Length: 258
Image 1 (cartoon, rainbow, N blue to C red):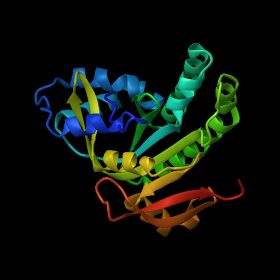
Image 2: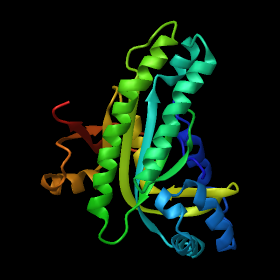
Image 3: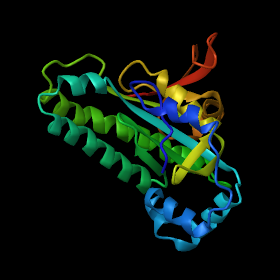
């Protein structure tokens, strides 16, 4: 699945910029689309041929999907690679984390895009009456991903580093909204405003464990916070982004009791 990616520390922006001018095939057989979707689908969906075929038909018909998108970035990964004593150990630590993340995402009904060099992009289909369940899953998974890095991966990177920069950790950005799955570069790309929004929210992260969501998801959490069992505090803020140099509203998520 095509990765939508960013800046020198994340590969996310260049493809976003190229996608706007790309031509999408309008006559791709649903069987081909199904084959492209399957390796990245949730485990439950990958084994459900009828479900895959139904989604393939929706993609072929260019129907929009309601998506919750997550962009995760490993902070200071370029410096860690430069300071690595052994590159094979660096690759093992980061690659192992991405493999763990992919399994966790797909086990929690998520779709996993490729490793982006220092992170990944994943998304969830928010279908009728599933919004709260999906948000619950993603919030819990987000905490697991941060904890996994902090409790396991960072020690392996530290042991393999000549110099350990401050601020090593993961940052997460999320957004929700309407998007599309389109054929792009012999694969399927997830496109739309929630993809750009999640990437921009991830770019706002400055400290290890930072999690930001765009206003669309932030408002859902704000109005339904008492129904979510993850003890999360929401901190509304206005921060400068590429599209909004004068400031853009965002929500920083903070887990209590941690």
